[in-house]
Amino acid sequence: MNGESVWLGPLRGPVRLLMIGFAILAVGLIAWLIVGHAVFGSEVAMYEMLRPAGRPLVQATLLSLGAALLLASMYLSDTIGAIEPRPTGFVDVISLICSRLAMIGIVFVVIVMFYEVVSRYVFEKPTLWANELSLWIAGFVFLLAGLYAKQQRSHIRIYIIYDLMPRWAQKLCDCVSVALIWAFTLALVWGGYNEARDKFFRGETFGTAWDPPIPATIKPAILIIIALVAIQSLSNLIADWNKPPESHTPMDDIDETEIENIRRTLEE
Image (tube, rainbow, N blue to C red; front, side, top):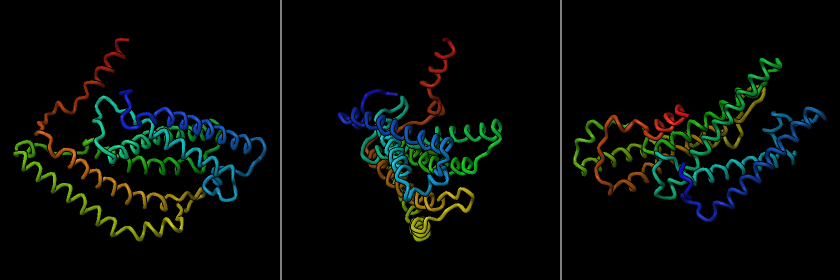
């Protein structure tokens, strides 16, 4: 990762301090809730974590955890990887923040599944929430990963005919592609807005023992993130408009930096 600040500038230090502070606060509150439930018989468990009304400690835990995740995503998006292009505007920054949130989400999925395996096969006490929580997080990871792929121009593209075209024809194809993405997005939002709104406002849940509000969150997220993908595609079109023609070969799929890192690891 490149250590140079990409977009935060002088705010990078304060964001880092706030991230650490909220992370410590969230971990402390979670530990307190776990100890209270295990030792003192507190009624607050994973079921109550989804229903924080009237529970100030749970509300504080969720707020501090949310703030820590947001600040961590902002801080991590301020550095870019060796193969990542630099952001060219506000839309790219939003996509990078979402991508870092998706990366953190993968870590949470691993932790949740590890907890479930240990709980089930070591202590013979399987949970009612681990599988659904991992599915819930993975749904957001999948959606945010699509936005990141669009920002990185790493989605599937077929260049066999595109590379043979003159630049004006390539621009025309790019315009048609963006127009089709926007048409699909508008049709999806038009057809799904009412359902997503109703699911969100009535807090529709999954109908299981833990009963998380997966439909109430995933359905609106689909529309919002698809809209962000459409905006990102338009941003890419504008940013790439005056770029010279590119030539694509199978060698483009080879990550020389990753190969060098693997070679260095094997030598050590």
